[in-house]
Amino acid sequence: MLLDLTRHPRYPPSHRGGDAFAWLRSAAPGRPIEPLRFLFTTLVFGRHDIHLRTLRDRQQFSDPDGAAEALGVSPSSWPLFGMVWEAGTLLANHMVTHPVAGLRVLEVGCGLGIASLVLSARGANITATDHNPAAGTFLGFNSDLNQSAPIPFVREGWADETTALGSFDLIIGSDLLYEPNHAGLLADFVVRHASAICEVILVDPGRGHANQFARLLTPHGFVRDAADATTPGDPLRTLRFHRSAVT
View (cartoon, helix red, strand yellow):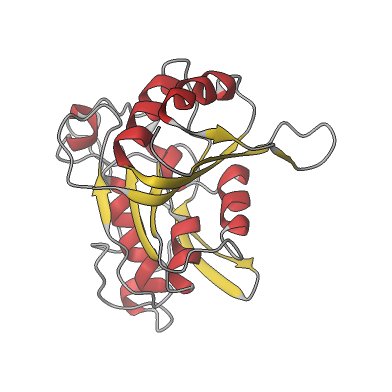
C-alpha cells in the first residue's frame, strides 16, 4: 500500500521537490499508468538523522517528457540515482567530520545526495550535481523532509561544454568510475571545476578505473594520498587527492 503523503501529518503537503507521487510513462497504448513506489527511511550519521525518500526498487521508471532519455539515460539505469548505495553512505560518513568551514563544496553524481544532506545539516556551502534530472527532484523533496536549507542542484553532464557551476575547494563523489571512459570524463570535469587549492574525495567500490583517474589528475598538480581501506577483503576504498597550487 502506498502512503498518501498529501494526507500524512509527518510530511509537508507542499515542497520544492514536486508532487509526492511521480507517474510512469505508459509503455504501450492503453496500458494503465502506474505510480512510482517509494520507501522512506532514516539514516544516522554522527548526530545527524537524515530522512530519505528513496525508490522502492530498481524496477521504477518515470520520464514523462523524455528529458532523461534525451540525455542518454536508459530506463534500466534511470532508477540508480534513487537507491541507497554503500559507497554513498560511506561518503556521507566522511562528511560528518571533514573540515568544510569557508569551503565551496561540490558533490558530483549526487544521486540521492546523502552526503549533501549531511553537509547541509552542518551549514556547509554545498552544491549538488547529477546527470539524471530526477536527482534534483528527489534532493528538493528530501531537503524539505529534513527541514534543510535549499541545496543548489545543477543538472550537469561531465562532457557538457557549457556550465555555470564555477570552481570549488572540495569535490566529492561516490561510485563514479563506473565505465572505462568515466575516468577521463570525470578527470576533465574535476579539472574544470577545481579551485587552485582543492581537495577531491571519491569513494570507489573497486571497479578498476581509479588508477587511470589518478594518472589523469597528476599533470594538473593533484597528488594522490593513501587510499583508506574499510575492512579486509572489502574493495570499497576512499580515494583522496589534493592540490596546493596550480603547477
